[in-house]
Image (tube, rainbow, N blue to C red; front, side, top):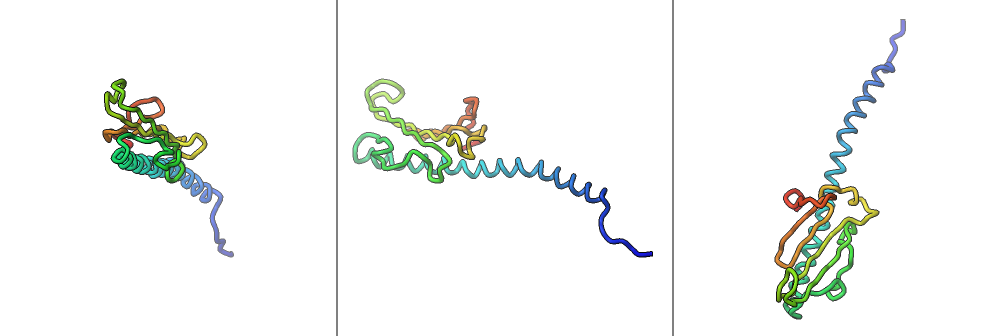
Length: 145
């Protein structure tokens, strides 16, 4: 009698099921890890623009918009849209008599970070206050920054 080599259908099916279970666990974990890595793009861009704001303020005694600072409205890697809000020191609002700024990074709506529900919006203001909010506008600064 001749000995047969190979795998039975049951053995192959068991391996396929095990691989499927591992993939079901690994893929979401990998995607979250990639999202975390991409968040660094927003943080780096906000920090860089804040430094440019301080340099601009030193020479002009005011904060500048994106055009004045020579920056684009997207982050360095292109995962986030950047908005710069400046307020002159008029005595009104949160800034009082001094000028102030707030830089906001939001994921590009068609980009891969749009699925990041935990850290949706990053902000940095003129006093160095960093905040992050999720899709429900809940403060998630401790987990995101």
